[in-house]
Image (cartoon, rainbow, N blue to C red; front, top):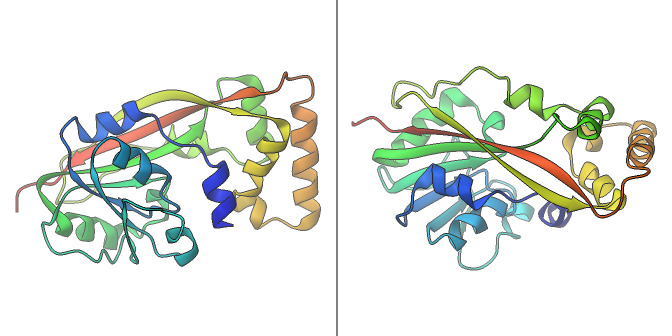
Amino acid sequence: MADLYDRIRPSYPTEAAAWLLGPAPLKVVDLGAGTGIFSRVLANAGHEVIAVEPDAAMRSRIGGGITALDGSAERIPLPDASVDAVVAAQAYHWFRHDEAHPEIARVLRNGGIFGPIWNIRDEAVDWVAAISKIAESEAQRVLHAPQPGFGRHFHPAERATFRHSVHHTTDTLVTLTRSRSYYLTATPERQAEVEAELRDLTTGLEEPFELPYITVALRTRRLPR
């Protein structure tokens, strides 16, 4: 599963990483890093990255040049005030926020950045919106969610969006769907239905086609201690 996730999930625009963290190299925790998809974007931008991920199979895919630690949003294995930024790519909605917010604040230096970020399908495109009718709607959950507060240790958050796209064929789109939690938890009968409906949906599209995404990023800073 970790290999599939790493191979098929979309990466993130470099512009989004630059907006979150700015141009100067920082010491950054990628929290709930998975296989390190966003960690690698940050490392390539010159940041020192510590990937924190509880799943050993996912963590094993993170790769060289990035420190990978066993931990979670509620248990970050780092000292107090030891990092410049904490990010969470496609992971924040899984955190236990009452426990995670104070823990993130603990490891951040004063003025340090916390930045959750998500890739969601651009449902302004009709055939992409139809994917959500077949499966799930990430856009409704993230794009239209109320602006979250991050607790008493943080300033109010800013929000920015970025557009990018990923080339796909029908087969790779089906493979991407196989990596999603709603597919993995479905019955075999429903999984077969989803695959068939996706193949019908993309009939007539010239391959490779582009699957457009909106990247939503939130940015806040730690208040002084």
